[in-house]
Image (cartoon, rainbow, N blue to C red; front, side):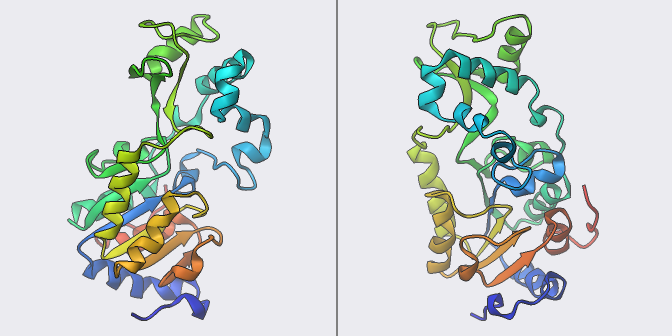
Length: 267
């Protein structure tokens, strides 16, 4: 299988080849990271303008040990959730390109590290999306496991509850996302790995490919015989495994390779 990784060709020169690969594929598995949502106004975490780059204390709020042990950390986290950019964010051209891919009957699975649900809002089928890090749009109780819509709890925060507790058992509430120090859901990870092993093309988008075990879908798919295409604004940790690297604005590159021909705009 020919690889284009060593040629350092500009993304524009690679687009026709990658487009042909996608046109010829039937079981495309997509892995998305924070980079696909930055054009929607949701910052990434470790980039130049990332959440933790600008505010290192915010990383503490995403660490389960600190969150459970320190009421002040929880209160700060709830204040931050009130103003989270996800509530006003809309899908961009990158998200819509992946919807187009599904409509063409080529999307086998969409594995996402993101918690914003913009893929579903854009129009991807919920049964295609594998959320390995959960969703910010739901709340879970750490004690009894009850889940409910995030907006219901945010209404309580707006009404004056600084650290709302579960109304069923009194336990600590958090967003239904995977925090640092919190175990991933084995069934979800197994589903992601199984899908990657079934791919004939793996498209990694907007991820640094540094977070494991999720990043391991890339070598897994490659070992199973799939082509690997990486689309990102910067270099990733697994560029050496790519058959083609497309570096640039995701909202411009994805429509050029995934769509049915009409989508070249930006979101």
